Image (cartoon, rainbow, N blue to C red):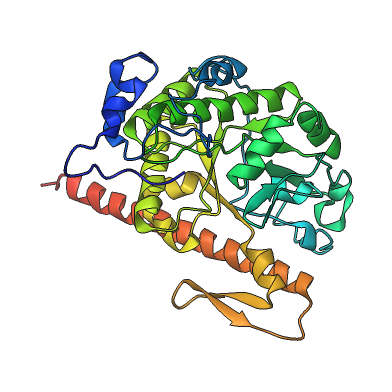
Amino acid sequence: MQGLIVFPDSPTLYPASCEVASGKWLPLIYPEETKEIIISCNNPFRQNIVTCKDQFKEEFIKEVNGLDLNSKLLSSIEDLPTYIPILDVGSRNISNIPKEFPVVGMTLHDIITQSVIDKAGRYHEPDTIAFRAKILQSDSFKSKKVILFLTGSDTLIEWVWYNRGECRLFETIKQMGFWAVSGFNFSVIGGECPFSQALNQKRSLFSASLIENAELLAIPHVYAITPFHIDRWIKWFLQNPGIRLFTINCQLQKSEQDIAQIITTVKSILRAVSSLHVLLQGFRIDKIEQFGVFLERIHFSDKAAVKDAQSRTQIIYDETTVKLIDKQVRNVKINDLATTNMKARNIFIEEKKSKMLQRVFDRLSKTTVKATPVKK
């Protein structure tokens, strides 16, 4: 997902050439959405997305039962901890993860033995998809609920999705012992064809329904980068009131514009649906106070604690500045360093949340005092 598009000062040639502009995909996709196009819909090599110009687009639509966000989900996930550390293959044997982290995460890349590789300027796919079937039996996952995030590069996502039947993806994930699984994070790229955006949003939701069919808890993955997208997802959440949690992969959103779009999306959805919480994967932790009062309903998950530990970096929470500080260390076991880093990130988020709630309480208290009539 990339950020909200800034409209160009002068019209481009691309909107008029998009099939969406003619109203062909009404009422699911509005012609007005083409105003945001800054990239041609001509994509003959089907790079990352399927556009309105793709000769096989009807087959892609049929695969996910139409473009409408009409897949029903029933998974109810509540009471998540504030911070959920994501572990990788290198951190699977941490035997001392504190009880304050009852839920941990993994990503698609770390449950597959061989992934797609870029070699000599070309992507090479292994002949078959093989899983680390017993990885959840490792020390790090004992007595833990494990969430699998189906996130990663476009190449990895499309490869696994295309071969999902052959490798028995969802059945295998179930057998491995995962507690909950997010929908696939198919790309929704700002400025691209609105048809491709709608298709990939539906593909993600459809994948969540397949997760539920495998008797796993499904977490819908939401990419919404325009007001049209946000409205469609709000409508879907209102039609699926049992859903309490959705997730967004934020790992590629580094610019201020992209971060602002995530914040806008999250605030808009949480404001409209009061029962919802969101799990943000890889969101920049130094920006979380920008969520304001909604921070209470937001959970965070990332690999930072273990990745920093693997590079001999300790994360320290500074109470004076309420900031996290990185420090290079030696003679510390990586596993111990990982748990130290987890605690620091958790404390930082909890302190930010506490201070935010205190500010809200103080404002409400002042308002109440001003509104109380003076007795004569």
